[in-house]
Amino acid sequence: MSYAVIQISGKQFKVSEGDTITTDRIADKEVGDKIKVSDVLLIADEKASTVGTPTVAGAEVTLEVVEHAKGEKIRVFKYKAKSKYRKTQGHRQLQTYLKVVKIKA
Image (tube, rainbow, N blue to C red; front, top):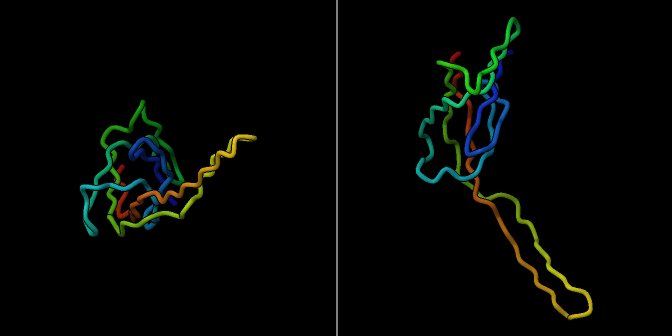
């Protein structure tokens, strides 16, 4: 089983072909669009692995946008003792689901 470590929007992901990853919203892409990532930090298979300095030359991972969605809701609660200050906020992060189509070494 071969895999790669890629970098998208400042975060690193270990991916194999057929995997689905969740990343921050990629606003300029629509569902079904292909994304080619050339920031490949490592490629490995059963026989050997190649570590980039900082990226692997000529390596490319093709991703497909599956869905745009919102993440799980979190609650943020601020509180100060003895001053009757309480504030509750909620947040839902915008996310993009990406499917790994091809890993090219």
